[in-house]
Structure formats: C-alpha cells, structure tokens
Length: 151
Ligand SMILES: [Zn+2]
Ligand SMILES: [Zn+2]
Image (cartoon, rainbow, N blue to C red; front, side):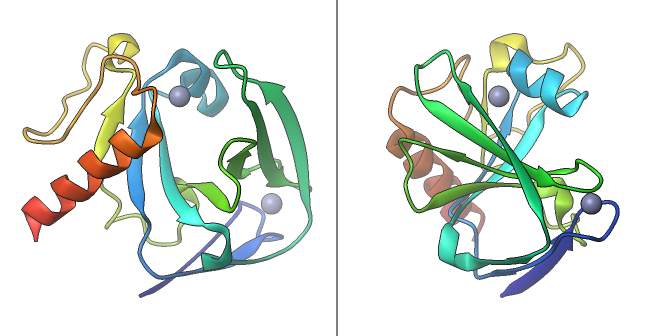
C-alpha cells in the first residue's frame, strides 16, 4: 500500500509506504487548540515509511507527561505535518488529514474522551479511554485487536 499527501500550499509532499501501525483520535484540549477543531487524527508510523520532500520548521514543547514533543510544519504555509516525541525514537505521528485521500482514515482508538465535544459519537466497538493509557503499547494492542475484528 502506498499513499500520498502534502500541505495546503504544496511545498511539502510525501509518500507513505505500507500500513500505519495505528490511527487514533485524540480529544484532549491541547489537540483541540492545536488543530482549531474538535480532535486530532494521528497515524502512528515508522519513520522509514515516510518519504517527505520540502522544507519544514519545527517547534518543541514539554507535554504534561514531561516528554519533549516536536511538531513539524510546512515552512511556507504552516500546515502541521507530523509530530515526534523524545520517548518514541524511530516513530512519527503523521497528521491523518494531510493525506490526499482521507476516505480510508478511520480511528482504531479514541483517547481523552473526557474532554470530547458533546456531539462526538464514537462508533460502537472502537476502544476508547477517558484519558490515555500510561503505556502506548496498550493503545497499540487495542488498536490492532480492533483492526483484526474488522478484517
Ligand atoms: Zn505548505
Ligand atoms: Zn491530544
């Protein structure tokens, strides 16, 4: 499987090879602020799956968990492309909405449902947490079990 994507101005383009490890929707207030929307949709991928061209800028912050997180955006239009975290070497959180075709994007898990907007309806059977699991491996296992249940 190969998918393409890019930023709004077209300066950044990428090819994503293979399946993501997990797609999650995060309803935390940080993600609501960052996206200016109701939630963020991230795809956990291995860094080597992404072949990206174009100039990026990066911005670092220390999350509530104490982990340093970096956001990578188009240097021209500012479109957020992906995030990395100091405790996840070799992995990236690609912004799912930057894909050229977003129709196949469907969350495998939902996190931070305690701050979800009132109108958000989670599809029955999709694993969810009021906050987020301490160990991302738990999220990954639940996501993969959910995917298998659909197959
Ligand atoms: Zn751009
Ligand atoms: Zn979030």
